[in-house]
Length: 367
Image 1 (cartoon, rainbow, N blue to C red):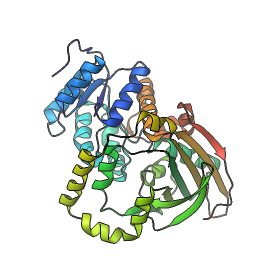
Image 2 (cartoon, one colour):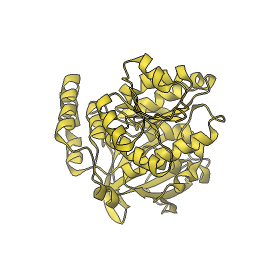
Image 3 (cartoon, rainbow, N blue to C red):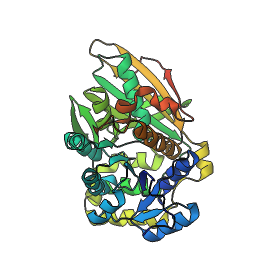
Image 4 (cartoon, one colour):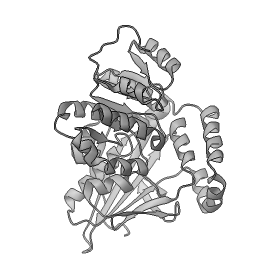
């Protein structure tokens, strides 16, 4: 079903437009003058959003390939904003390959990045671009990794550190986290992704003017930074909310509890019904995200750089819309699997409003 007056020249689809992050992306797209076709699974939510914005809409359940084909037919790209992406990506990807439509998403899930990387040749043959991770994960950190690699081409080790201040989490993000509670953390060693216990290594670092404890975690750059830089050893550390940090020593018991899919689904349902959609506008305006990257080689050479961005959901909206615009300008030039920094270059993140970097930092970090 479509809203009246649909402009059939509209070239891109925002799938998951009525979700928390989808709405922020939509606001940014309208601010920049590139309105999308609104899409998702829920026709009532789409109709309400269409009435609110005056934009056309089309409902297409992910489990209905024919509906997805109708949605994408004649379009140039889809920005997929409906997670958890490990579940929602495969049917959307299949439809994009069938219809020759470029695929972008805002995932941070390692399994999704790795799956899309494996589909590189298939997508390239069909002239389809696969560009996941055009949000907070992984645009800033991916560009930071590429910046470090450019300054130390011999680097064999990469450490990325991420810390948010005054930030909240959306229901969608929490739901994805809950559905992945049973999984270990991960690092890349000698080119291979290796499972490790969550938070097995803790560092103290000064980020955003404060000394913080950061924990080694499972994060998308374990996948993407390798594809961007070729650095074979990668680890990611993050600041964690205090309640979550206190849970880390109990992870074996938590894992035993949440290993059952029914338990994870029950927790995810609780997140959906009991929590607000996401941070308020005031919270987002106050929030900042700090990144620090370390790279080194076997000869002891080291480089370090910092990056600072707006709050995560704000950054995601700006980066995602900027990526859509960039792809429109070079749609005939690229295809196959790409990462943001590999496609747009390490300095691309600096073009996003509110981003500050790359700032040098001390190279006496522990290795």
